[in-house]
Image (cartoon, rainbow, N blue to C red; front, side):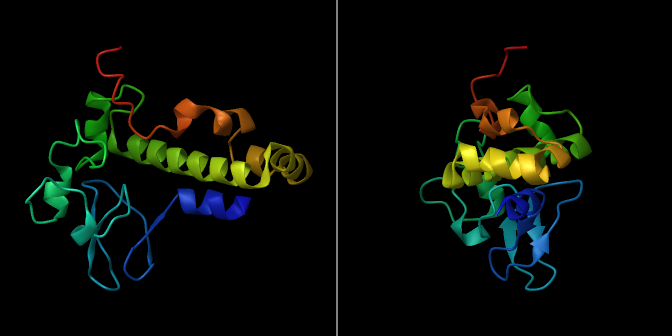
Amino acid sequence: MIEKAIESGSQQHCPYCQLTGIKDDGCTHMVCQRCKCNWCYLCGMKENECKVGNNVQPSLSAHNEDWESNEGRCPMSLISIHELDIRWPENDQDCLEYFHRYRTVSHLFNVLKLIGEEKFNEVNQYFGIIDASGYTVQEIKDYENRIFIDYTSKGNE
């Protein structure tokens, strides 16, 4: 369970055919190499299911509009998040690493909730899997690390 959480945090699956996709530089729009369908790398939603405004045809571009004030939407690029949330880095590669770390911490927290903190700590003490992966139990438990975009941090530099 823990291994799966760590693995799934560093990649995203096509919501249509489940092929693993890894984002590179550029926008968050993905086109699956296998099924050629479009989806959002950040939220993992299919293009036709993306959250958009009322009376707007679902599309990835519409899903990106007004993301700064609509928590159900996603930015077109990771580097733009820093303008709203100062925790995010200012370059693409560091943003991608931050995003994957956020996802992994969130997935590990879900495992912690499922099996309980005592069992989670026992597994880590016995196998060292959390420590060896570069995470700490405290980091996983820290709520702030599980907030994708902090919409309240703008201007709090």
